[in-house]
Length: 184
Image (cartoon, rainbow, N blue to C red):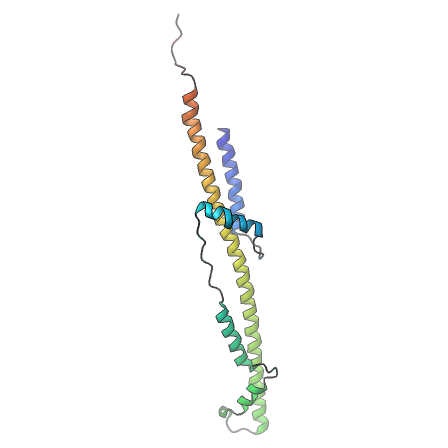
């Protein structure tokens, strides 16, 4: 009976540990020794397959974002955006303005495009940071899932073993004590 109570207490403690790993708030990835233990030893032993990682932002998408960002700012290796400004000045969408009004309009549009470019850059940076945090969180969750499965099977095997020992083996080895009435 004490064995079952002890195993129940250990089970509750391990449940708290596994839940802590499932909902870890760390942005750091798990330590290498823990990752190695889980991936090289526990995962093959339990015949666990890896879960698919989230797609995230692929390098192709990042390259496209950088290219689009350069198109917006006009920075194709040219820091002042001169090439883009020249193309805007030659644009016929401005109508019939004086040269001064036309230049102000072009400068205003360039300023708006520059501000948008900065906002896009900030949003992209935040997305990348959140993606890295999400990857670390996913690694912790993956480790928690494997450890949860390992402790489940360990607990189940011990429960079956102790149940067989206490209900089958121990009674079979005890001498037969019959409940006969004492003779007078």
